[in-house]
Image 1 (cartoon, rainbow, N blue to C red):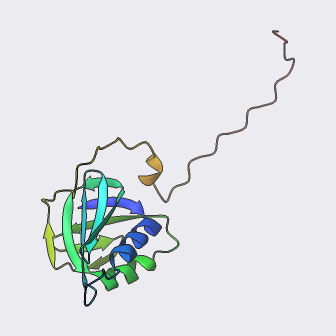
Image 2: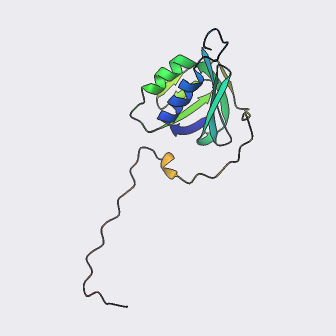
Length: 145
């Protein structure tokens, strides 16, 4: 699994599904994180939340919810995060943590229409586009009107 998503959005998703639902005795300690159909989903406490993302590789993993949220919050100053997961674990940049389960086979929790990526800023989050050079002043403008 490999995807890029805004850090603040992913934090909000994890917090939202971390809430206990009525009738539930305690919060679920594990979180299911999965990416497919150009979306990233989190599932916990019988609740699923998702958001459109740049999904480069589908996948599904299970990890500790509270620990994952704490790790995400350490990236507060970073606009976009790229997460990768496989059987060896989950990686965010040079950080890695183990996962209790991983699968490359995953299905979305509903039917979604997938649109092409139009914002290439998500592909290159840490680079600033070059600024165009100013045009030299023009002399002797002609009035064509």
